[in-house]
Image (cartoon, rainbow, N blue to C red; front, side):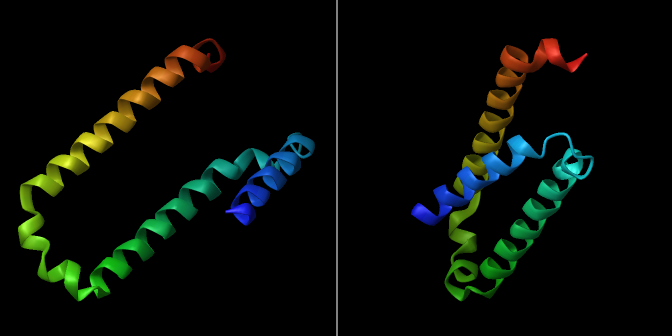
Length: 91
């Protein structure tokens, strides 16, 4: 846990001092690519787990419902945070 927090704090410090560099302005694309890569490997891990695949049919509608509710909650929370804190800076 300490290493995760140390990496986060190091990133904040580097980001603070490197915010004027052009390459740093494109970190959003790198973050999106990294998230997609992590999701891909999560899918590979799930696909290799025979227990999950065998019980996939029993997960069924509850799993889909929980996933959709979680996604909608995240979207609504993100929308609220954007409107509350970043709306005046977007234009």
